[in-house]
Amino acid sequence: MQHTKIIIPISLALLTMAGCKKDSSTEQENITRVEVHLTGSGGFDQEFEWSDPDGGSTSNATAETIVIPATAGATIHCHVHVYDDTKTPAQDLTEDIEAESNDHLFVYDITGANIGVAYDDTDANGQNFGIETLWTKGAASTGTLRIRLYHQPTDKSNLSTPGGEVDFDINMPVTVE
Image 1: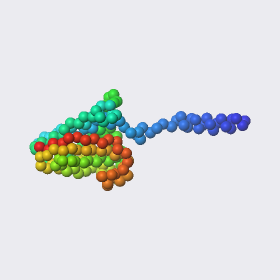
Image 2 (image 1 turned 60 degrees about the horizontal axis):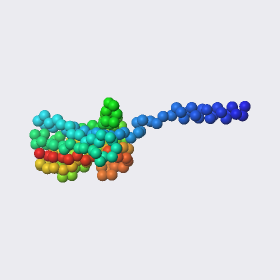
Image 3 (image 1 turned 180 degrees about the vertical axis):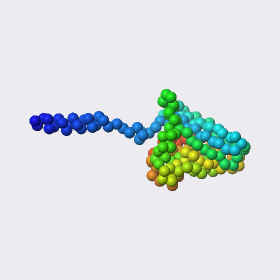
Image 4 (image 1 turned 30 degrees about the horizontal axis):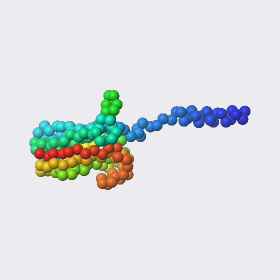
């Protein structure tokens, strides 16, 4: 009788542990490709790609030069798309990131190029999200666009150091014509 009292609680505990699974939505995704989709006046509609095929060290990453022609107009809409190409077929992570906008923040830094970036979206709490932005184009120039995606930022109003984990940190050359 004594053994039965011990075995039942142990069996229940083992069954409970066996039934627990890690929540896949909390796992960090393998980001291998980021597309910057720009649209503007005059029919300007282009996608520019940063790619790290193996998703590991970024030493073999490539980045297309973002070229904004004079005909694109002064204001350009940007939407970022995020992918994991290590899966077959490639997994589009964009919708998952949008669904979890409260837990994500895109941060943009422009160096050298005459472009201003303003957020064109917010999360469910009315705070910055940044998958959608409006770019204001200035004079012809060249430079670098840095995009970082933060996961669980602690301060979405602090775009310099919002806290949290960095899901990706990429650089792309930019030319304003």
